[in-house]
Amino acid sequence: MVEQSDRAPLLDWEEVPPAELAPTAPSPETEDSVQSGLSSYPTEGGVRADISLNASPATPSSVTAVSDESAHSPQKHSGPGGDASAADEEGDCAFHGLSIRDRRIAGWEEKDQIVAVFVVTFDTRSGNMIEWCLPQDVNLEGVEFKSMASGSHRISSDFIYFRKGCYFGLACFANMPVESELERGARMKSVGILSPSYTLLYRYMHFLENQVRHQLQCPGQYSPLEAFYEDKKAVLPLGGNGLVTACPTSALGPMVNRCMHPEMKITHPAGCMSHFIRFFGEQIMVLWKFALLRKRILIFSPPPVGVVCYRVYCCCCLANVSIPGMGVSVPEFRPFFYINVADISALETEPSYVACTTEKIFEEKKELYDVYIDNQNVKTHRESLQPLLRLNSADREKYRKLCEQRQLLLYSQEVDGDCTSNEEELFILFFMEQNNRIFQTLSEVAGSADPTLTAEHVRAMGLDPQGDRSFLVDLLEIYGIDVMLVIDNPCCPQCCLGELK
Image 1: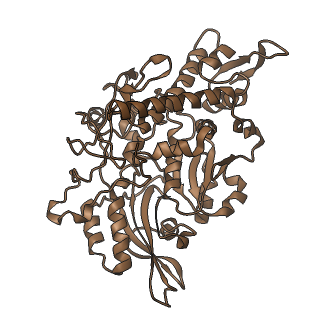
Image 2: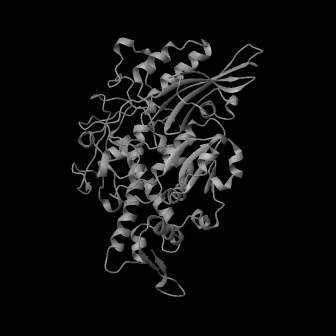
Image 3: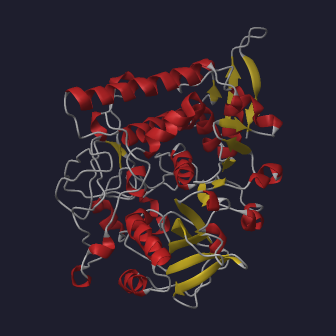
């Protein structure tokens, strides 16, 4: 198998003649490959369980097959890893199980919305500064530090996802050696964009990479950026509540559960989730529990920070739940992507988030996070969360099944030439099904005549009655599920551990 890259798919926007540009029809040769094939995945008990939403908002979700592809091209393309994707009449889906048909019914379909484009430079006397932007009256305060990560002077290139107020940004950074005493031998710039959603930002990765190189070689030539903004610009709202969402879920009504996030393959390149899980190994099960509990997760890494931004998104995907109404009362699990010291005040009021940083000083700011990740080391300073760091037998069994399913998928791809499935879909579906099974069981027990959660129920959810006790106690409290938790105890069989209101 060919190892897939962490880099985003390329959209060679600037090489298309201006007369041929069309926001709704990107070039097929450069379009992102969105693969289908959720229906081929094995699930526990041999039952296939793909989540689909019916046309009627009031109708509960059903179990059916969902197949996605790029909305912009009916042809078969190759993705970053070289795998071809099968065409599907539904088009691409921004949510698990939400087809183009469903989105049309809801009266909303995500489109290109670029609200700003900018160039940031490093000045040897003034530091990071905004060199140029459109529109000229847009508030970009702090973007000069978000789009050029601390420590970037030690690397030649990088890309960064970040949050700015109620918008998300993507910037490409490059560092070019120059024979200039004034610039101290190096010229550093970033070219970036802002949008209300991060799900389509990846489309412009290649354009931004080309433009930052162009700005390094020919400083001050902004005509391609001006043309890009005129082609993709969106109208800035007159006011806003400052809330950041992946997309306008409120416009979709009850059709989409707010705990769901845009699909990985729509947002990031193929291979992203695979690299994430291989990087953390069994520790992925620890991160999964913290994600379900909506903890504040901070990831530290030195530059480059692009791949770490992918890990932020992957953490959010671990908490996907597709049961209607579940999780409405819990904090939304928001990706902040890259942060720096300028974001400290914003983080102080955030009840739940995932972010990454290159600044080691954050480790000392323990009031800002619950979980701190340094490389592959996951730790927490909160005593109540310490038990969750220990892997139990159920965790190892789930990880074993995940690896087993992955091996079966790779085998089918190599031996049978199966190109209808990919690892990202498998991983996302694996955790979504696990989460759905937990909350479905809890909901059924809570609604029964005897709302008592026994060890048998806990095992049926794929959890360890003893090792996952503290996890379950926190889960019931955070989600407001009213059950009596009862587990077997060697000293006192059927010992009641208390009722959670």
